[in-house]
Structures are given as structure tokens and as C-alpha cells.
Image 1 (cartoon, protein in one colour):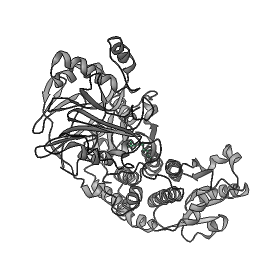
Image 2 (image 1 turned 60 degrees about the vertical axis):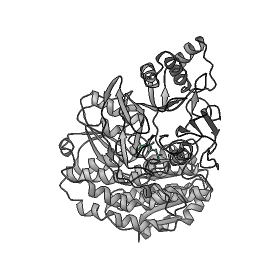
Image 3 (image 1 turned 120 degrees about the vertical axis):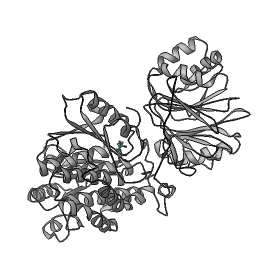
Image 4 (image 1 turned 180 degrees about the horizontal axis):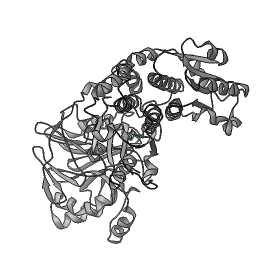
Length: 577
Ligand code: M6R
């Protein structure tokens, strides 16, 4: 986060960093230009401290909240980093891949390093370039081509009334105020002040003063449009909920409805309406949404779908052709971005499904469909997952003959119904477990993967999602009365075989929590805890079962006193490979 303008910078940056903390939260720091470079850095979370940085003076400043890559989280490795003379301060997102070589050369030239970070090399390189160039912008323009990897950089220097911002493969947006500018990784902290945004492109270097911004790509000056962001400041607040995650779970009926409504036959690009085959690339929850899509599209339209973890795709990509869909809430996930670039290299038509306007993935894809989930702050993906499914189900509907239109337009009502479900019995079983299995068949298999991801991510209980028929091929050895199984058993082709699987698990002592259709006595009779879901279309039962599993993970995590919105070791946008 950076600020330059007519107000004191430090308090604005402190508040901004609190909003950006979901991107990384092991340490934080701020630098302002007051009496020289004034610096304050700490291990830990800015939101846990009563930190105001009030002692830092000046109307120009930069700050950072860190997710460690190079060097443990401590005060010294926290950003900003400075040069030998403490005249230049820099914050950095991303990774400088060639930092080791650069550091070696800088040390040979007499520079002294304080931290273990990759970032500090940039501070020393700019120090050298500034000495010869005597101009901060030119110094950064000289240094940036030497850096390999990904970076969003903000740089300030003693005696210079500017912030220099540089971007390559890591997001950076400028907020345009009245006699002031903001810079941040996303718009969340800027919305307090302005809705006007300039999204920097790869290779851009911006020279910002309180009243002007000049943007260069390399050394050539370029124009970037000022765009209006349609998220409101209210969307970024907790609104009376104990956690962002709970608020976002409750926003799902609206997120689903809005996302369904946003997609019409006309908004779906022509190559996507009639594909011979589709490849999907994504990570984490977005990958699970892709797997649900694979089951549903292949079943409804007999169109083959190939699904890859984006992190694998770049290095082991198959001989792909046709349409490649990248799914990403943030639109910044480095692996998904690389996979889509790879697909473009194969001359594939690329479609991005993302939530964040102006995000990098939306910019590089041939076509983008935006989810209408609104800002998602909690690290665990919830409403974005439901919004992804809304769009993917709409695509299926338009590839097919439109038979799901009514179903999708009313799906939000079933989601509303399950929000208030009492899960206390299931939570009690889960909170005492060492390990939990989640199982399902067909599209409910990826639902089980998603349920297990949510559980392990926020409750820290080991959990695994499995295709229900696979448990007997190994994991049965782990079943015991301490290992609950959460089974999703909805009516349909696999109902009978699911009941058999559940009985096999019961016979091995595992307590079973089953999600089934309300009124299903056969199922409720064989399981320990029965969670009834509304009787509705199978597409919508996918949604309601996901929502119940999100709530199960949420309440289990709360019962265990976990940090629900900011689970340990994680960050919301993973902008490194
Ligand atoms: O922003 P993306 O959808 O690309 O993020 C992908 C994953 O990092 C993300 O879904 C992650 O798995 C979530 N924290 C899971 O809740």
C-alpha cells in the first residue's frame, strides 16, 4: 500500500494494510518520508496490534504486510527494505528469482545486507542506479530489467516527492483521488477514498506525485485508462458478522443469483458455445469447481472436459487445442496465470472466469466472464466458489438447450434454506476427530474434496476428500471410531451403491455424518447424523451440499477457537508459483 498526497500517510497506510492483510499476515512494516526515511517494522499481524504508526511523519509513505517466501517472519525480514544509506525504501510482492546472483555481486561491490529477503537486492540496485542517474524514476527504469521473477514494487526516496511503482506479473492498482494517489495490490483498501482506479500492466513503471501520474512501459510513456470500480466500501466490511467467512457464506444466495443473471447466451463467447472439447486449469477451490463442471458438462452434453491443476499444467502440459478455461477468484493466482499463458502459446482460445475486475488473468485471457460475488476477504473461498458454479452451470445450460434456466434462476432459494441449519451434532463429532474423510460420487466427489479442503484449511484437522468407491482400496485401513466420515448421498444413479459404501464404513467403526435428501429414511436409519437437504434439482443439490460443508468447517473451526479468516501459513492470493 502506498500513499502520496495532502494527508499524513502513516494512518492511511495502517488502515489500508489491515484491509490487505488477507493477502499475507506474518509481519508488517511502514516507511514514510519525514525527517529522512522513517521506518517501523514488526513481526506479527497489524490487526492484532494497537499499532498506529503515529510517530511516522510525512505525506508520502509505503507499507506492506508479508507472506514469507525468503527468510522467516521477523522484524528484520519485514518490508520495507532500505539501501545501505537508508535513503531508499522499497516494498515488494512476488519473488525476485535471480536475487542470489544479484546479492553476491552487490556484496562484492561493498553493499551490506540486513535481511534474508530477495527484496533487499532491489533496494541496493536502486541505490547504485540513483547515485549515477540522480533521478528516482530513471534509477528504477534501469534496475527493473535486471530483475527476473514477479514483482509489484513501491519505492520512495529521501528528498524526492514521488512514489515509483513498478509491476511485473504481480498485481498493482493505483487509486486516483483528489490531490492524492494511492497504490495497492487491490482496490480493497483504496475504496475508502476513491472508486477511480488505474490498473498497471506488466512492465509498467509509474511515477506518482500528489497531482500527477506518468506511466512508462520500459522507457516509453503510455496511457492507462482510469476505470470505475463497482464494489462498494460496505462490501469490504464485516457487517455485524463474527467473521468475514460467515458473512460471505450468508452472501451466497445473492452471489449465485447475481452471477446467474450476469451470464446470458450473448455474453458467452461464440467459441465456448459450441466446443468440441474443453480444458480447464485452476487451483484449490477453483479446481474443485472445474471438476464439478467436468462431471456436469460431460454428463449433460457429452463434451469431453480435461481438467488440470494449473501448477502442473505449465510444466507437463498435454498437446492441447481448442478452448481452455482458467478459473480463479482473485484473477492473480500465478499458477493459473502461467497455465493460461501456456495455452495461449498453443493458440488455444482462452476464457477466464474471475471475480476481480482488472485482475491480471482477466487481462491476458481472450475472453472473461466475471463472477458477481463481490469482494471475498476471508482466505477460505466460499461465495466465489458458488459464483464460479453459477457461471459454469450457465455455460452448460447455453451449450445445451437451455433446460436448466428455471432451475438456475431459483437456485438461490435452496441455498437460503440451508443457511440456518443446525449442525451442532456434526460439529461435536468433527471437533474431536484426528482425521475426517469426506466422500461422494459423481459431482458430489468434488463437493467432498471442497468440504475437506475447507475443513483442513480453517480447523487444522486433517481431512481428505475421496470418491466414495475408492475408500475400500486403501483408506479403509484408517477407519475407526475417531475417524468420522462425511458422506454426500443424494438420490440418483449412485444412491444404492453409496448406501452400500456407507454400510461398509459403519461396519469398520467409523461414525457417519450423511448429507441426504430430506425425508430419506433409508439413509437416516443407517447413519449416525443425518443432515437433510431440500428436495431439488441435482445441480442445486451440489450447491446446497457445498454450503453445508462450508458451515460445518466454519463452526468446527470456531469451536476449536481457530483464526477462521486468516488461517495459519496461508494467504488469499497466491501470486508466487
Ligand atoms: O484466487 P484463486 O481462485 O485462483 O485461488 C485458488 C486457491 O488458492 C484458492 O481457491 C484456495 O484453495 C482457497 N483458499 C480455498 O479455500
